[in-house]
Length: 556
Ligand SMILES: Cc1cc2nc3c(=O)[nH]c(=O)nc-3n(C[C@H](O)[C@H](O)[C@H](O)COP(=O)(O)OP(=O)(O)OC[C@H]3O[C@@H](n4cnc5c(N)ncnc54)[C@H](O)[C@@H]3O)c2cc1C
Image (cartoon, rainbow, N blue to C red):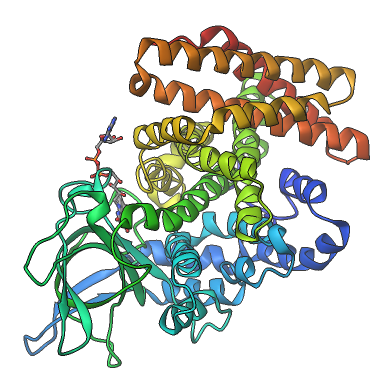
């Protein structure tokens, strides 16, 4: 009798195997644009399971090392990364994962193209998407706040080039020991050095990811000639720091240690002391927290797309495994309860996908000057919502996908535990779920975003045709009505903060429901080959996630 060995889960070309991504792009992009960009997506989908995946695995196996001293005792603070991590940098430049958004060959839709690339790239990349996210956020910051300043333009050029030899990524140095949520307590000081005609920073940054980047944008408090500073968030300014000199040595920066992290192990995250670090004020003095939101709104959208990317890979692996693994006389995929478990995960991936890409589309319009006031208010609302909702879903989906594969997925050398480890950071960095939920309240109170969002949802639901989808649209509409009443109740009870998370999740679920239904309706009208699946999952989402919302949204 031959011995049994289980076949491992396998992945195919991640573009070709992703019916949702392909159908979404057919829906949202003009046909000639899709014809132009599709060869690149096919290529990236293949690389996502070949060389990029191999570099991701190798980078994970060889995490960065901090080398504080050289052999002769000089302090050097090298951070040594693997060749695979360097290869991921090179390939991301060459594939234009950031550049595509700034070349704007297809106007506002360039963001959709770029985020489709990121979606294919993130999951196998051992979170190389993190330096890219911050580099992209820094680029947008420089575009908005750098004006025509030659220095800022030069940095922007490095951040958005496809030339791997000139390509830079960036860090974002905000979190200090006092906290990442409340950065108004930042104590890093910026003093003007009259002799060198530059600012110099003194302070400690407690979490600095992608510390091997060439650039960082940091928050610091400008000290006046009299030695005083302005407290609070408004007293902070944004500084650009080029980390290394021409010889590669850190410029008055000490690496205290690298963080020993649960996940994202290939990504260097350091604790730093800034010891008179030369830094250039960008965007003028003061109001730094508001200004740097330009950066972290980009990284939040990256986070949402990365979350969906990780979920897609986890579910693809679990689905493939279900056809290879047998139990009780048949493949797992033929057991109704296992199939139902996988469908539940697929529903969450699809809902998260349309939610994340609704923020992507609005971001593209905003960057290209095509957004109306209502679009901008919806972008303001949906950026934190897309980030917080998909971050939470990513953890649930990764955990369930691992269980669906079973004990093997808990074992390190299968590479599968990484799915869960790397998902767990997504709800934490770039703003935790609670902090973002409070931000959603601020958007509602300050910009009237909720009313504009509700108008938009109702207008779009009216356009949905077809009996099946009209009934689902009716349920989305009821859920939207419930949100409106809920907000009134919460305002009356004055328990806004305590209810902020419930509200944010409800808006996420309705936005996702709307997107799934619109996508299915488009598929029906255009005879899309994936329409049956689109309708099935849209109906499922509405029945399971929105029907309960109408009754279950109670303020506490
Ligand atoms: C792997 C990793 C890499 C990171 N890289 C970077 C980086 O490159 N640059 C950078 O600047 N930061 C970075 N961070 C830091 C990250 O942004 C912070 O950890 C995050 O913002 C939370 O801040 P904190 O850890 O200080 O938690 P705290 O701010 O202390 O929050 C703790 C908890 O309290 C909750 N909370 C806080 N305020 C409220 C409130 N008002 N109402 C309700 N709940 C509240 C939060 O939701 C959270 O659950 C990184 C973190 C990790 C884990």
